[in-house]
Image (cartoon, rainbow, N blue to C red; front, side):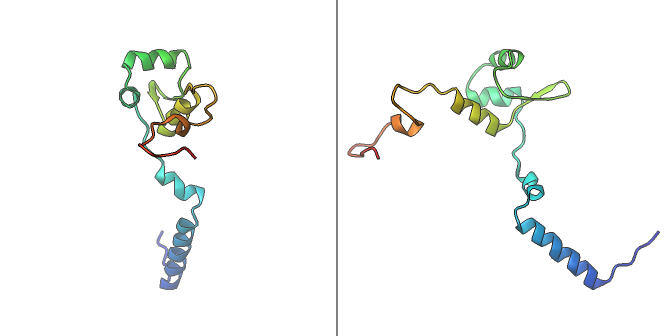
Length: 108
């Protein structure tokens, strides 16, 4: 089976595709998702041993995705987990409240 498409139809299709991509639709954002990290990658990212990652996964203490026999990790999920598990000094509401300051720099 052969289908013939007029040049004007091709142009309209191309314009529609361009409009969808420019609109920032969810389907266009899918291509921007970061690749998943494996166990070695997340251990390197966190600066811990692989055995610690494996134990945290087995105890379901760290967010991960199960793909067949493989455990994969989304960087944004790990970053959120780090934020949730950050222990802050009493009276401090954000990380920037206790970050080191330069000389003569005042807190806002």
